[in-house]
Image (cartoon, rainbow over all chains, first blue to last red; front, side, top):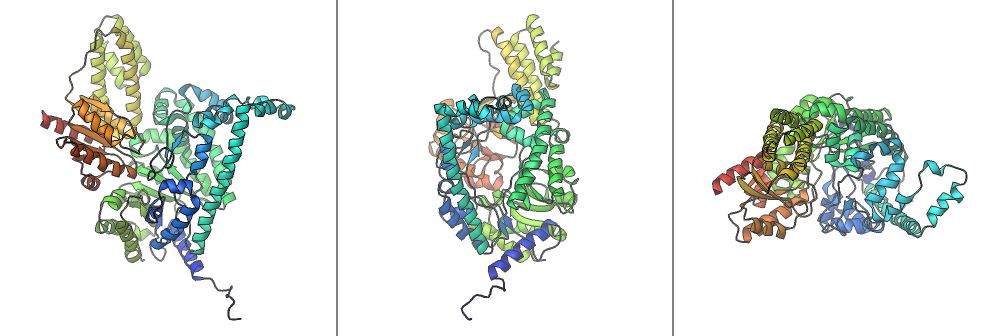
Length: 423
Length: 210
C-alpha cells in the first residue's frame, strides 16, 4: 500500500546516526574513518543560542531539553554530550551547601560549581578507613547538606545488625520529628529527580530521532581525585602527601576496587560503551612526576585497565596541562582509550601517544572566545596535519564549547573539520 | 642553629622546624630574626617552585610550616614590626567564580617577593575591587578566574576600575582561560600564565610607579 512506510529501509536519520557512530568509533580504535569526527562537550553553548541560561536548564529541564535538541543539531556534529545539568529544586529541598548553582545562589548565566573544603578532617582518616560507608553517611552527608543533618544521629551501622533492629533502633530513629522531615524531603527529591531524568532521557530520544548520537556520561574518577576533590580538599591532600602519606594511600587503596566495581556495574546497566573520567589533581602544576607516580597514577591506571578489560572504553578528560605526564599515558594499550585533552604540546603528544590514544580536543577556549574564525580554522588544520595520519583524532574545544564562544568561531571549527578533515 | 631552622623549612620538616623554633626562642634570639629566617627560606622555596623542582604540595607544606612558626613567635613579638614592602597588590577571583587555588599561589609568590597583598577572596563583586583599590591606594590589581565564565566579569571589573577615575591603575589577569587574546579582548594591562609571571609584572609596575 502506498501510504504505508517501508519499515525495511532505514530512514535518513538512522543512516546518519550509524555513520556518525562508526566515524567516532573508527577514530577511537585508531582506524581511519571517512573523515575526522567532531564530538563536542556542549553544556551551555547550544542552550545559549536558543536563549536558555544555566538557571533555566537547572529548573526547567523540559524547556532546556527542547531547545538543546533544536539547536545542537544545527552544527552537524558527530556526537554530543548532554547539556549541563543539575536539578536545582533537588539541591534546594535538601539544603545542599556543597554546590553553588545558577537560579539559587549564582547568577542565571553562571554554571554550577563545587564548594571545595575539608569534608573529612585531617584526623578522621582512621574513622574513614575503619568504615567508609558509616563515615560518609553519618559524618560527611550532614556536612554537605543541611537537610541531611539528621543522619548525624543515625546509630552505628554495625550496631544495627541484630534481629530487633527494624522494630527497635531503626524505628526509634525514624520516629524523631527531624528525621521524619528528612525522610519526607528524600521522597520529594526522588520525585523531582525522576521528572528530571525523564526529561534528560527524552532529550536523548529526540536527538536519536534526528540522527544525532549522544555520549552518555557514566562518570568515574581517579581515586586520588575522589579523596582530594570530595573528602580532603586540595590543601588537605597536599599536606597529607607529606604529613600522613600512608593514610592517604590507604584511603586510595580502599576506594579503588569499589570504584572499579561500581563503575563497571553502572556502565553495564546503562549499556554505556564509554566512561568519562574528568581528572583534576594530576595535571602538570599540581605535583612532580615522582609524586604522580607514587600517589596518583597507579590507582588511575588500575581503573583504566579494569574498564578496558570489561570492554568499556575509558574517556579520561586530561584537564589542565599534561605534557609532563605523556610518558605515563604512553604505558596504556593502543586503541582502547578516548582521551580528551585540554592544554598540551600537540607535537609531543603526537610523538609519544599518537599511536596509543585517540586524541580528542583541543581547540583552545581562548581562540573560541576571543579569537577569529581564521585563527580557529588554522588551529583545527594544525591538529589535522599533526594527527591525521593516525586516524585517531576527534575535534572538540579544549574545554568543550564554552558558552562564551563566538558562534562564528564554532562554525569555523566545524566547517574546517568537514572540509579539511576528509581522509 | 639558625641554619638548622632554615634547612628544616626548605627541607619541609615541620616537626624539626618547630622544635628548632622553640630552641631559638629559648636562646633569646630576637623573634624578628626567626621570622626573617622564615622569609629567606620561603624565597628559596619560591625559587624551587619557579624552576620546577618544587610543586604545589611543597608550597602548601612550607606555607603551613611558616604559619605554625609565626604562631609560636607571635607571643614574643613586642609591637608589630613589618618588613618593608615594595608595593601593594589588590587581588581576587572575579564574580561568579569560586576557585581559589591559582589565586592563592599568586598571593603566596607575591608575598614572599615583598609585596603587600590584599586578598579579597573568591566570587568578588566588581564594586568590592573598586572599593579596595580606593581604600588601599594601590595601583596594581590582579584578577583571577578558572572558568570561562570569568572572562565577562573580568571585562566588567576592568572597565569599572578605569571608569572610576582610576585609569592609572594597572590590571593583570590570570587563570585557565586566559592568554594574550583574552587579555586584549577584556582590556587588561597584562596577563600571566603562572605565578612567576604575576610577580615579574607586579615588579615592573611597582618599579614604574615609584
